Amino acid sequence: MKLYDYPPAPNPRRINIFVAEKGIEIPRETVDLGKQEQLTDTYRSKNPACDVPMLELDDGTCISQIRGIARYLEEAYPQTPLLGQTPTEKGRVEMWDHLAFMNGMLAIAEVLRNTSKGFINRAMVGPHDYPQSPELAERGKARIAHFFEDFDQQLAKHDYIAGDFYSMADITTLVTCDFARWIKVNIPESCTHLLAWHEKVSARPAVKANP
Ligand SMILES: N[C@@H](CCC(=O)N[C@@H](CS)C(=O)NCC(=O)O)C(=O)O
Image (cartoon, rainbow, N blue to C red; front, side, top):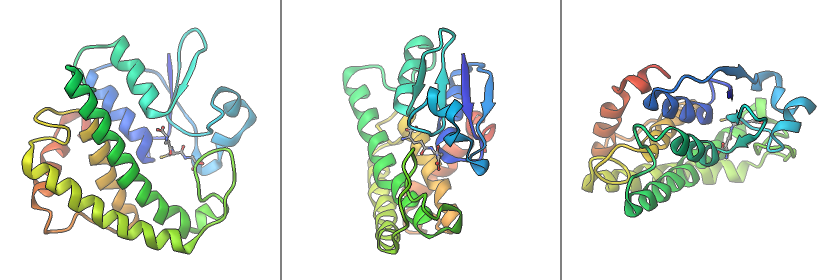
């Protein structure tokens, strides 16, 4: 098994924390996004989505997309469950992980990829090129503010994002909050529940090992 990784980027960090929480050792191969190695023919033939992370199994099966990778690892290594244990927990982890990705991670990406010179004509992750759009960057800023408020409200009611247990939804939300710093946005002071939760989950050894 091999994990195709690029540690500086936020989505690979999600899986790296997930793997560390489970205590699994997986060999890594770096796909340097700075050199656009995700777009080479060799990598594309394994992962047509042209993104990282990606997991290659010993029989050559390739699984991309964090939901796919996390699901595989959760089933293959059930110790330290991170995707919920009961039907209700599993549903809630999926729900909140998806909300954090859609409303947080993608909102930040919307700002970054539509403003940074490094992403000219690469406004979207994937095999296809798209031009930047200043309007989308503006919308992204508004969406990030709402993401912080909505998740702060959830944490006013629960110790963790999907309920009273730590899960993949916490990992995605944590990585999203840290990713916001890339566009010089921090968790607002008014989001006291989110700030307290962020301090708590940032202290976990698996998180500290994957800064
Ligand atoms: N939906 C994907 C997101 C993966 C993703 O966006 N990865 C970024 C790094 S954070 C990437 O590979 N970017 C390649 C590019 O910018 O072309 C997943 O769930 O794995």
